[in-house]
Image (cartoon, rainbow, N blue to C red; front, side, top):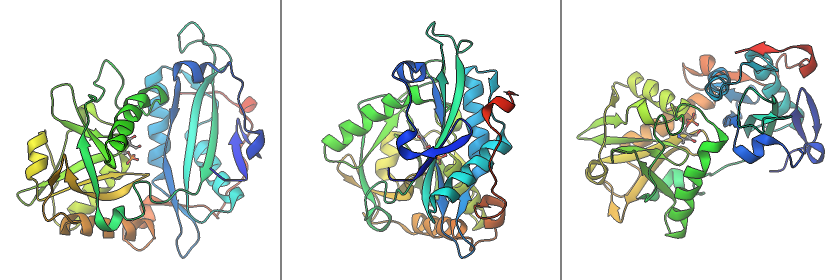
Length: 320
Ligand SMILES: Cc1ncc(COP(=O)(O)O)c(C=O)c1O
C-alpha cells in the first residue's frame, strides 16, 4: 500500500499521518462505506474510470447506512479523488474512498456520531494473479451463502458486509482455488467475493439479476460493451450446474477487471481457456480504459486537468 499522501477529512496528509483512533466506532461495528475505483494510464495522462458512477454509488451506500448528512458532496469527492491521484504521481492506481462512522455512535445508531471521509490510492495490479487475464482462474462454489436483502444491504458497499467475502475467499484459497462463487439463499448463483459473474449459455451471455448482488460498475460497463458488438446480455437466474455446462464463465470487478474462469469445482469450463466472448470483452474493456474506444470520453475522468484542493470539512454539511 505504498503511496505518499492520503486525503483525510478534506486535506492531503502524509501516509504515516493518516491514522485513526482505536475508539473509532466504524472500526468496531463495520459502519463504513467504501468504493474501489481504478485510474488508468492513457496517452493523455492518467484517467479515472467511471468516477462519477462510483461516487454516486458511495453516496448511495451512505444513504443505505442511514446517514443523513455527509461532510462533502459528489463534486467535492470527485475532485478529491483526482487530487489524491495527482498528488501521489501515479499513472495507474487503485482509488479507495472510505466514509466511516467517527466521534460517537456507540449506541448502534447511525444517527449518533459523524461520518468522516478518507481517500487512499495505491498501485495494485493482477488482483487474481499475474496470469489470470491470459489463462483464466480456478474457482469453487463456496460453502458460505451470499448475503441476502434484509439481512445485509446488498446494494451498498458497506465495510461490515465484507467478512462474508473474506470467509469465502479465505476458504477458496486454502482449498487451492483462486476465487469463490457464492450462491444466494435460494441456491442460485449470486456473485463472487469481489466480482460479478457472467456465463455464456448456448452462445448467449447471461448474468444473475441485481436482486441479491452488488450492482457492479464493471458489470454495467460490460453489458454496454457487449451490446455494442451485438450481444444482448440476459439478466436471469443461473444455477450452479448451468455454470458447469457453460461455454464460458467470466467474472468482472474493478480490482479483478475481466477474468475467465477456466475451471469450477474441478470441472473444466468450455475449452479450459479464456473463451472468445470473454476475450472480446477483455479487449473492449482494455480499449475503453486506455482512452481508445468511443465510450472512453464519457467514462474517463482525466486527473491532470483542473484538479484543485477541496474545501475543508468544516465548511459544509451536505444532506444526502
Ligand atoms: C461483492 C462484490 N461484487 C461485485 C463487485 C464488482 O463491482 P465493481 O465492478 O463496481 O467494482 C465488487 C467490487 O466492488 C464486490 O465487492
